[in-house]
Structure formats: C-alpha cells, structure tokens
Amino acid sequence: MKLIKIMLPVIALLAVGTGCANKNDVKVAEQYNNKESLDEENRILYEACTNRNIATSCNNLGYAYDMGQSVKQDYSKAIIYYEKACSLSDYFGCYNLGNLYNNGRGVKKDYSKANIYYEKACNLNNDIGCFNVGVSYNLGEGVKKDYSKANIYYKKACDLNNEQGCLILGNSYYTGEGVKQDYKKAYAYYEKACDLDNGSGCFSLGNLYHNGNGVKQDYSKAMIYYEKACNLNYGGGCFNLGLSYYKGRGVKQDYGLAKIYFEKACNLDVGLGCSNLGFLYAEGKGVRQDISKAVQYCEKGCSLKEGFACNNLGELYEDGIGIKNKTTAKENYGKACDLGDQQGCDNYRKLNEQGY
Image (cartoon, rainbow, N blue to C red):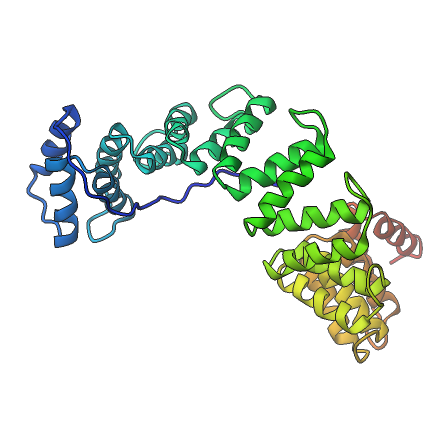
C-alpha cells in the first residue's frame, strides 16, 4: 500500500476567547496596512485575530488566504495567520503550516520544517499531525528513516482515533516492521480501524480470519468483515466476497452473488474483479454467456494493470467465439507478461513460436 501524508487544509470551528498582544500581532497588522478590502466574514476574523488573539480566527483567516476563499489567494498571508494561530497553540494552524512547507506552497519545500509544525500539532493532540510525523519517519522525509519512531507516532494518532494511524500500526505488527511481529496486536489495531469505518482495516480483519493469523480460522467471520469493507467501498472486500461466493467458502456457492460483488469490485477499480467478472460472462456462470461483455470487463481489468486480466483477454482473442485474432491475443499476452503474469509469458512464447 502506498503511504502518503494527509494534507488537506483545515478550517476550525470558531471559539470565543481573549488574549494579550504578542510580537506576531505586529506582523499581522503590517500585513493588513495595505488597506486590502475584506468581506464582512473575513473582516470579523481579522479583528478577532489581531485585537483579541482568538487562535481559531487566525487559522481561519489563514485558510481563507490559503484557499482563496472570498479573498485573493496569497500563501504569504496565509503563512502569517497560520503562524500566529500556531503560536497561540492552535493545532490547526500548526498543521496547516506543516502542509505549506511539505508541499512548497508559498515557501520553499522543506520537509524538516514541515515536520516541526506537524510535531507541534501532534503535541497539541492533533491526530493528523501525529500521523504525518509517522509517515515522515516511515519514508525518511526530513528525518532519518526510522520505523520504530514511525510506529510511536502512528500509535499516538491511533489513540486520538485516527483511522489511518490504527491501520498502519496494524500493518506494522502484521509484518513486523519496526516492532516484533504480533498478529494479536495487528488484530487489535485493525479492529479499531474498522470500528472507525476504515474499509482497509475491515478487509485486513477479514484476512486474519480467512488465514487464521492470530485468530482461529473462520471463513464465516471473514465474510462479515469483507462485507463491511465492501459496504465502505473498499474494493478488496467486494472482490473477496465475490471469490467466497464463487468458491462456496464460508457461504453457499452462488454465482449470481459472485457476479454482484465482482462487479462492485470492478466499479471500484479492482482489476481482478473486472477479470473475474469477464470470466463469468465468458463461461455463462450466474449470467447469460456474453463474449462481448467478457472482453469489455477483461479490457478494463487489463487497463488497470492487472496481468491476469490481460492474459484472460488474450485467451478470449485466441479461443473466443467470433472474435478470434491471434495477433491481438499475443499483444495482450505480452502485456500480461510485462505485468508479471507467468501464464501470459508462456502463452506469448507459444504464439511467438507459431509465427504470430
């Protein structure tokens, strides 16, 4: 799974508060001396930020400049207001500053500075700040790569109910990356991620039950979690449900239900789901046989870089009813082979030896 930071700018709910002026007020006041007109909402934010040191108002005004919301987009002004919010212990301000440095918006990209602000946000109990520091240690961005430290921050994120933090920590315990491998702890963190409606967490729980890792093997329980994952639009859950119904594993065999779940997986861009859906149409299992639809779904699976789908597409062109074209078959076998499908390599070699 590709690991990325969460970098959506955040606007805060306004809170009422008072405070004394500090050195950041001078910068804010100087920034406003250009007499730029603000709409009523942003003028209120400005007054609350500069005159009363309401941190959320500073952050939200920074957000307005960051996103160009009712004002001309201006990252340099966004930085000023985010800095003041952060100095007033507003974790949204710190987190948003981290995003600017991480992405190089209005400033030179600087992962080290981004991590400083993400860590400030984390220390103020911002779950996303903690998660992003964890990703930095995982990827070695602005810090020395250190899986153990990454897991410390993932745990803090998870403790703050960050679903991604729970999921990645579960993965760490499953693989033993930066921690001692422990399927039971992996289960606990996957379960929390699933309870927080993370589809991948539910899918991973299903896999633990399917494979009997840390729990007694139980295909029926695996199905429960695959179904929850699928209902959360996690395509892997839909695919595994389809496969379970196709094979009759943990449920009564039902090609019709297999078709439904393979189709949903395909619609969620799971290449194997498209390939298996194509197979059902080619064989007439659970659906009326339809070679054109079989080709359609295998083509989509192949376009999603699924080698198995490319190989199946090649077989349809080599042996299919009314669409035989061994040159096209060979092209698709070649794609399958390039994607690591050995059957595709074998089929390509066979047609190549035949002179196609």
